[in-house]
Length: 112
Image 1 (cartoon, rainbow, N blue to C red):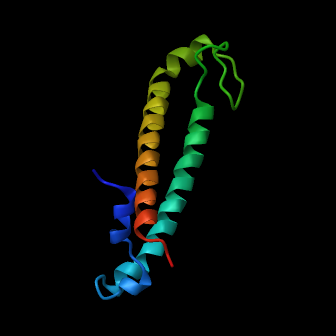
Image 2: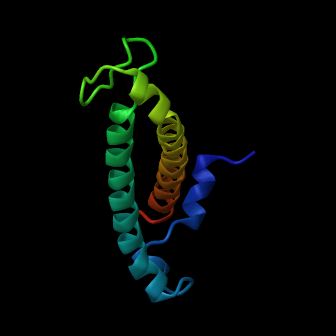
Image 3: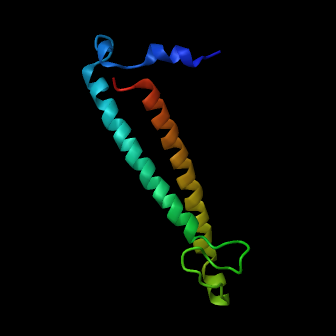
């Protein structure tokens, strides 16, 4: 069984330079910053996409515009609603993967 205390053997710090090349140790903070920025972008996109979706129960209005659902909008928007739901799921998966990657990078390199 894997314990979290065993993770300390894999930590990269500046004192471990003999085992790990310097460019690897120096690139970890940059990778963490890039991951954090990507997480923020995905989170903002998720908020906008969820607010733009039409509510299932609520008279057919969406959260941003408050426009009512008409016959024209219902027939025209079927493909658009399907795409919005698909992009919501894709963004949620990307956001989850980025968060797990950030957790792994943060646990490997503590930045002492």
